[in-house]
Length: 294
Image (cartoon, rainbow, N blue to C red; front, top):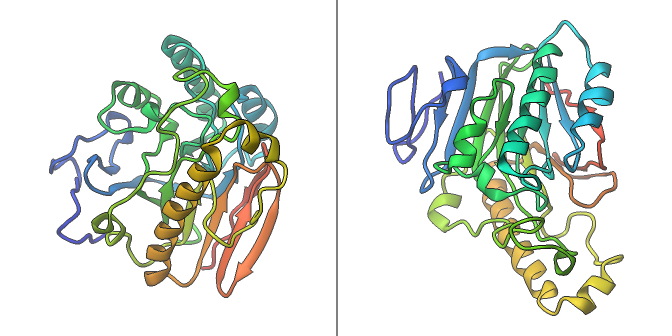
């Protein structure tokens, strides 16, 4: 049983607070409130393996046909997706059809997928209370995680894995994209008020984001110079976003000194350590297993 401060909204065993329970979570607990931190507790399944996957950009055929068959078949697996899942580029009916196909493959492989949003995802599919998000909840093995969420998973080797999730990033090529079709104005990391930052708890094992905070690789803007010349507001927005996510990590680090941060967005691989904090950048379609300390 997990304990939460009074300023959280929560559900346990179907008892409603200010939130609404998801139909596909079974015995799980889910806290959904746009004004408060979301808390999701998956206590109805115990995972044998936990994986992280990099940006897939809507290439669900690659995920289902190449990545999933390489996983252990008999055991329960959870995959955390760092964003750029690639949802929202088709019609809504098209997205539902694509997710139905992927969900069947995940279910057959005994895999549950938990995805945060990247800049190449329609944010409305990840917002609690939004119809697009609600309809995605019909899929048993896919969960789209709202920003500023605590996800709790049960694993064999580490009873409870606590994961802080925060999506979003700026598209450096947005001048070449079509608003509301391949680019969304609210794609950036959200600006969390201090009262929400104060709710970030102790005991975090994993931080899952799409982009990275100040001082974490890559620390320069090599490779995007031509986009900066074409988009006069890009440099400013990148600075705003960096400030927002750095503020979040400052709040995390006040209460947590040992965790692993996984992120994507930059289409390369990298690992660096700062004390007992590990930051790992995943490349496109890169799949790694998480080995947690017992």
